[in-house]
Length: 157
Image (cartoon, rainbow, N blue to C red):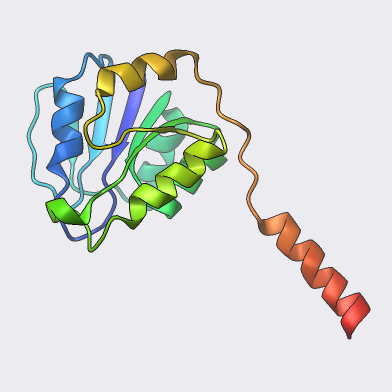
């Protein structure tokens, strides 16, 4: 199994997620894009950043994506139809300015798009759920926006 761990480009460290992956029962090939988080591991291949082409390739090849709670990364992984576990960064740990990623993760999880990994959860329990998890097909708002724009252009103007 191939797992891609993504910490994003936030200029604050997020070692909590890497430590959880390190301590988990996760096996197989694990690639972590750590961003501003300095981390070394015998379990994972850790790189600071991947170029766009390599990032897309890693995302396409992954069986599982474990990511921070950023909208852009989550939506990219979902657009590839990946199983996603999302862990919000928290302001109280200095991982972000505030806890808005918890709201993002909760929103995507409520729609069945991903599995949340919140502070205090056991990552192995979430990984166990991921084995049988089938994400809902991702439906962005793009089509609705175009329909409303078309309606406005034809009916209002």
